[in-house]
Length: 88
Image (tube, one colour):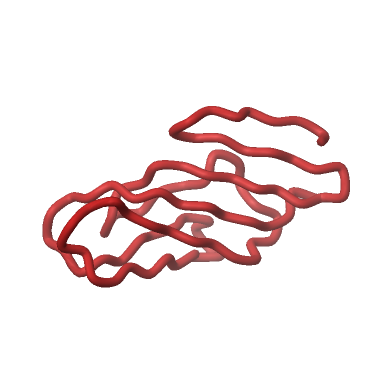
């Protein structure tokens, strides 16, 4: 481990081989950023403990380096996101 910030709501772990694992609590249907910008983004996962959400999709915009969670709700719901990529 190169460095880390293992907080509950927003955190990350940088590995010496360049892998960067990040997580955060993020709003649905709004843009948000990862705690640390990725050099290369590989894969992400999101989940919710809210009733009424039938599907979610995590999208990464390489130009703005922002994420968006699309969910089938008009309400502002918060979801948990895990993002994996490279920092070097």
